[in-house]
Length: 149
Image (cartoon, rainbow, N blue to C red; front, side, top):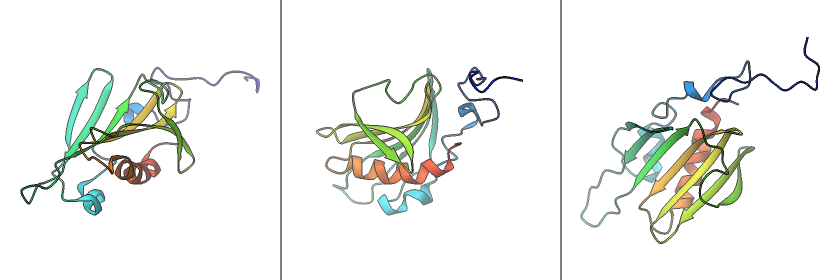
C-alpha cells in the first residue's frame, strides 16, 4: 500500500490514476452550435488534428455583407500545460486554473484551461476585434463543466 507521501500514478497522457484522461475528450462533442447561438449562427464544427493539438473549429455563418467573420475553436493539447505558450494573464474558470492571452489588434483571444500540469484545453476566438476575450470567456464557462475534473 503506497504511503500518503507517494506520488500519484500517472498515465502517459498525464492523467492521475482513476481520473478520466484528456485523450478521451472529443473537442467537437464538448461544444455544439446550439451553445453558440448567443454569439451568432455557426456552421457545424470541423475536427482537425495538428501535431499535439486535437481541435474543433466553428465559423460564424455570415448573413449580411459587412458582418464580422470570425471563428471559435476548442482544442485539446496532450503535451502542453497552461503556462506553455504566449505570456498571458492568470485566470480562473469555475474554479479551474486558466491563462488568458490575446492579440487585441487581430481580434484573437485564447483561454487555456488546466487539465493537468502537462495537458490543457484551449478555447479560442479569432478575428473578432474588440470582444474576442469577452466571447472566449463566456465560451470557456460553457466548456469547463463538461471537462473531466
